[in-house]
Length: 351
Ligand code: NAD
Ligand code: DAU
Image (cartoon, rainbow, N blue to C red):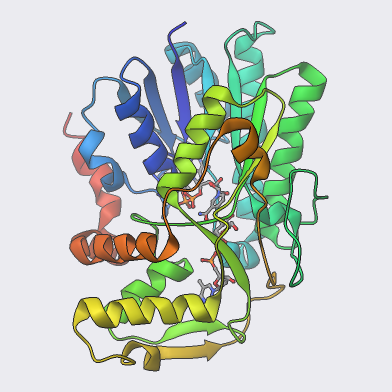
């Protein structure tokens, strides 16, 4: 059966890499990207594929049930890959309700629409939910999150993602909706919005501005190149077992301070600044409220059962990422000035 896939949040960081991979790798699939274009959604991320014959963009909000029903009827979706979310922990601390609205209610609206539309005829259908390692809470200095680690979310963001995961499983157990879930560690790479640690520091190093490190910089994150994440999503979508959860991670733990020092070192070299210049920009600032100490993913299940492995060493991935930002200063300028938000008007209202 021909696949018609709804990808939500495809104008965001991970979503745009996912849309590109599916549109180019599977010309016989139809890919519809539904995105509200919040501050984090940027259609310039997809300029290179926007005219592909198997791709369509729809501007809309996943909490709008009537719109979703119309969209499912119009396109006849066979699967959903649900990436849309409010994704920034710091924003969830200042505005938790926005996270409940999109991440919880939006996910339930999608589940409900898919269930109604497929109407118990679940052959060749799939609802694939993209989630995060943050649902498992915070680790001490030892141990890893596995797929059976108990949920223990500790920020409004992770609580909203945990809640959405529970609803996805509830629709599987209660209604038999075919679902898959993956929980991934921190991503980095091109098109990352510069409110998150890595792109923020690249931007600030470029402009010789302070690099804000929360607390003492001792918190640990497990970093994965975004293209490796979307490759894992591809593998899970096609060969993962229905009803299962897969953890995705890079076996790549860094304290924030060591990570930022590595960025400084590589950017000294790339910008021709004397060694040690950028490190002087490091500034310790007030810690994030409830800051989780350590995340670390055990991705053995994904590697053993589906054969996925990360492809890039971190130093190489971070070097590629810095090069991308240096070669795409226009993108950065548009994002920081907000002018990327006019792109939709220009691009889609001229048609
Ligand atoms: P992002 O913030 O870059 O992009 C989110 C996208 O969703 C944006 O394009 C935005 O416009 C869209 N969106 C937001 N609210 C919407 C709504 N109500 N209706 C329709 N579209 C809406 O996020 P990201 O970093 O690419 O994360 C994508 C997904 O992956 C999220 O579900 C996130 O929880 C998960 N995740 C992210 C990471 C990471 O390190 N970034 C790691 C693991 C999991
Ligand atoms: O683990 C997966 C999660 O990774 C995703 O689910 C989230 O969507 C994604 O945003 C990311 O969350 P983090 O909170 O880990 O990412 P962030 O880049 O915001 O922060 C990374 C670490 O750096 C964290 O320990 C907080 C710290 N930090 C962050 C910022 C923005 C700083 O020290 N200074 C900063 O200015």
